[in-house]
Image 1: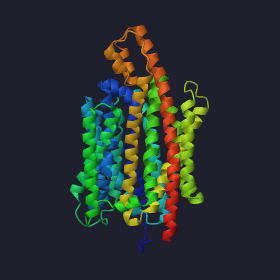
Image 2: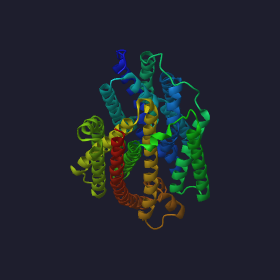
Image 3: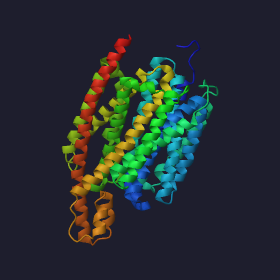
Length: 506
């Protein structure tokens, strides 16, 4: 506790930064339900659709750590206000994008703005709340906004698409920014303590390019869209850049990121949990949104409503996790939440969505609650293992874990879905070779090629597509369940080690 009294406006500051954070999170998932509409409106190819969704978390994953350290150098207030302005302009650009490449560019700008906003929000909360109890509550509320925002994204997206054109899913950010910008400008303290010394732009560039090249290579390699030689080359470049970054960090007198954080088992466990849990959540939401719209013929808004149990339960998870961890310890809470999500995924893999009954909503709610408790537990693990002076770096590492998780989750699920779908798709005879090839990519493509076939053939093709997708979603959810089971075991051992290390320190 410091000697000076706490900021009387601290809860107003929390409200302002939580509002600033909301559009960034909404934008991660709001597109999930808009994909079918958007694909057809912009006539975007399967690859372009993946880029439209993915470029945002991909770029953000590369930019978060550099932007977090930049905010430490020049002040959170400046970077936050700049980020909000960029985000606002990029939203307008995205809403009126005439074609897919333009929309991809706008999403890149949104990622730049978002990467400026996210670490600042955590940094400001940490500096504003000096009392540990209050800070815990503030971080819990912040986590709830994050979980609820990501979860409400598809609902808001669905409601807007029911009444307006697809660009409205981006325009909605602008009124929020119009309130948040002046609020942050007035409320945030003009004077802040900043870290002295220059910001190592060279190290930042190495990290950004290395992250993007590596993640892109993994994505492209899995999608098998690029020749293998190209993928290996990009991967090699990414790995070389990242190794150079690690070398500079270890040698530099003023490193951008303190790599000794990775020597703590609790931080490693937290980051792995953040990646796998957010990846599964993003992948499952994307799979379900497509299943509900393409196979069950629901509107985007109905699909959003169907997913409410996941969302409502996820919003409860944050505050619950803090209380449970305090009561029973982090390790049992983290492991149990992961084990429950594995069970819920396995259950969803074998249930029939045509006749959901009570089973599906209950399983969805269990999955949402367990995953969000798991994510909050990862936060507690990371923040608990970092000292106050390292909190900024630890916070940006955690945010990077979320971003990487959602980006890789969507890619892995998307690619895996495409492969399994192609294997299960049995088109009626007489469909031309070129069209059959296009249809095997995704169920969206089946609907597109069906427009070029006769009525009977089109109906048969769509029926085949639906059958193939239902089989696909079972395989996908089973795989996700197995991954969660493996993660449970891994986290169990890592947190046991963390306990051992902590005990030997005391």
